Length: 166
Length: 104
Length: 341
Figure 1: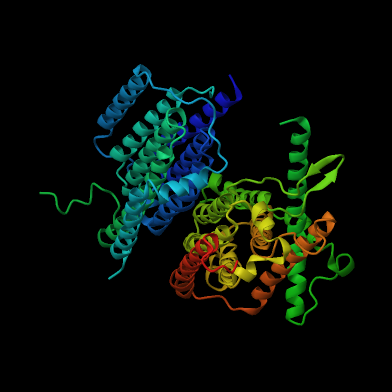
Figure 2 (figure 1 turned 180 degrees about the horizontal axis):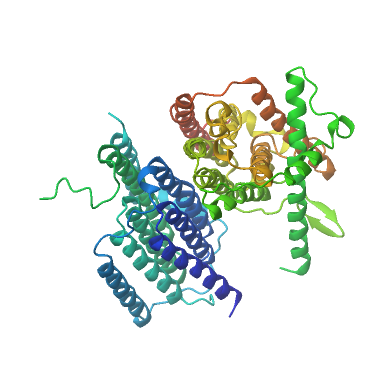
């Protein structure tokens, strides 16, 4: 195995193992910590793919903001979250488990059967990619960029209105 | 070219997506469901970046849309957590099976 | 990467870790002496000349303290939390250039560990990891005071990180790079960014104190209300690790502030005599650290709602406005609109 393959397998094991830990653990707080490990593993995969900028953004936004928010919400509701006897799953969980496994096998089978049109040799230059990305957002992709901005603004206002105490 | 084939990334993403779907559908805790959805979004991002790297490396679209997915995930988490807190305040629970006022 | 490069990186990492740990030890001494002066006291002066061996004595004392883990605590998380508090703080310093390149054993060695083109994003990312030590400690201790401290810390750090990121962004726009090395180079010839970006500097100054949870923003550990906040249950070396994390974060964030606004290691003749550059950097760094201590001795703690008010309703709009103005100025500069630059 080459070094890259070793790193990939490590990152993949961390990602998937933590994901399994997240959905099976009883405590929601510990589950959220597993989720952070998943985000870290995905960031490592991004960096391995040559998308260093996105890897850092993943850490900044997912681990630095989204996960902190989730932990914050868990800590704000300790009475229900800290209850060790609360059931983890709803009634249909065996059915869901079968369905999720079926979905996984289907996707993996599809991935393996498809003949992917691989292109371009050579690694991308990471240097200056953030600049390219910024220019892309301001020119060709300005519409998705603006839509995302409006979405963020709406979500911001919506969250404040919903969470506000009367 | 990289020594890791594209299919490896896609398989990891597929498994991650399935695990996330399981978490989102089987959990009773509303925050557990939200975390499952975040996993699914992450799996989508792995696919986007992997396709960018192996198929369309000169273009920007792959990474750019991954950035937008991250934005949407952030917005979604903020609104979902606000909803969960509002429900907790009025109903004193975050168990989705007990939030059934509109059920006939 | 050859063996020599590898050795260089290992040596530099060890030097940084050693310097930060020593810096932490002497920062405690420095803080106690300075606060004592400001309060017309003497401060620790018995162990060694002027009390210089006091940190050593403290370390020995802490090592022999009983190490208590509360019975109801989540043991694994409880042990993990102090480590999580320290490691990101140490890692953050890797991007700070402490001097110009020096030639040693026939090799040109730049005096920074890593020059990444996304260095500042890395710094902000590590800053957001820093909150986890506090959150984990607060939850794992299974103590109401600790939990409240953890809650306060996470809310505070999220709120102030936004304004900090935007303040950094204005400097990034002027320098046209996210690399601290490039930013320091852009300030050659005394064109320090504190002169061009006074507002961003003030915002950064306030947010860096809030991010390191120092007085007057030390609500997560407010003694009068929360006993000791998130580290109420901690004792011995684990308690010391939280302090280490806080002080090293102060040193690292001051290093970044010096590089962003005060020209980093730059000063008269620093290019010719590299050791002068390191000296300039050190002097500027100590000035920031003195400022931290000075503030703690001077200002009373903010009330919690005032803290949130300041973060969201004052600093955030101000930094946004600053970004917009800076963007306009940069566009004007690049298109020669004013013909002034």
